[in-house]
Length: 378
Image (cartoon, rainbow, N blue to C red):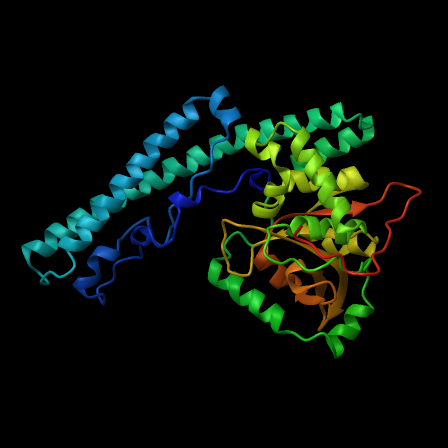
């Protein structure tokens, strides 16, 4: 349920500050001068997991989480310092010398301690995520009840919130994600691909505008999916954030800042979609079937820069066949209101972060199709 949670604490996970924690197996072909950057054993290429930002509500209800986090942060700082000292002392040692033996032993001990730290950090994150996700779902359900949503809408919201989960290739790394985005963006909008896409199955809503410097991709995506103007969707999002209890007090007091500087999380996307109609969480295996049924899909993907600790919201509008495989037409607010992107199911799986959220209007209503782009970001 990580999609429901606040983003990770960036200060603790700057790749430049923890690069010395990334290890590979030591081989005999590696010169001893690189010894300090390498380790044999279980730490092979395993990155240190970033810590979550502990919410004040969960910290107050479960003080053990801040205590565990502080202990892990101190341990991580100690390991970083040990690594720097080790690298300095063992950067250049003679093969077969006592110094090489000492460095090898020290490296093995350091690698074992880092392995234990990774395991403890991972367990802490899992424990916190479970508690925090349950709290967020409870608070969102409570707001739906206060707003007077029908029993059916409340039940759909609760079901979707519990169903939302990660999706896509769990082994995809930043390099693969960046390359996939480059391949997708390099494709043109004419020729056989565009013709096949035009004959594909799906709603194919027109665009809601172009995202500029803000983090409001989810508002654009929801506007695209619901057929509502950007301003209407942004206003409803702001109201939900302001009246809910799942975010911090300062965030609830300034929802516009949240929309522009942070964006919405997965749970808020579901709740906002349900506010405009009906939302259903759909796994990637059902994406094509869902589009064929005429429902646009809000999809959380990793961004173009390959940052696996960040997310970006797009809309899938059509599924079609190309070269005997399933492909998708995708709308990305970063690319403006008119450009369609085309990507294969395999490419989508590489960049996919979580399940899709299918939207459909309430029975007896139809979304109002946008005829002119609506400038966003304000």
